[in-house]
Image 1 (cartoon, helix red, strand yellow):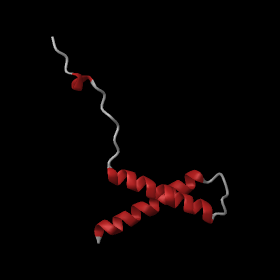
Image 2: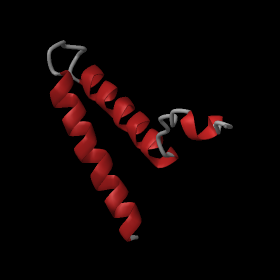
Image 3: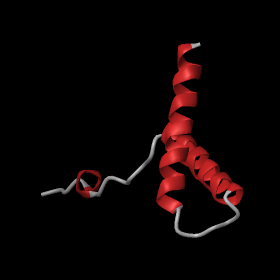
Image 4: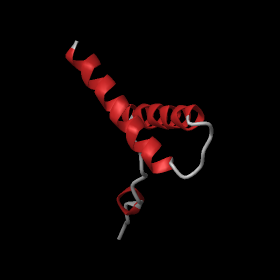
Length: 65
């Protein structure tokens, strides 16, 4: 009996390109917020959420244009 190796292999985790671009854009913006605050530690989640909000709003505006 033959076994098809392809069917037994695990799927690889892949992130769609737009998600990667969005993640990188959020990361960059969160870092900018950190720098603008004077590199004060302890606000990483706040910066990330603010960056997500800004990037999401920007993408919505661009999609609606």
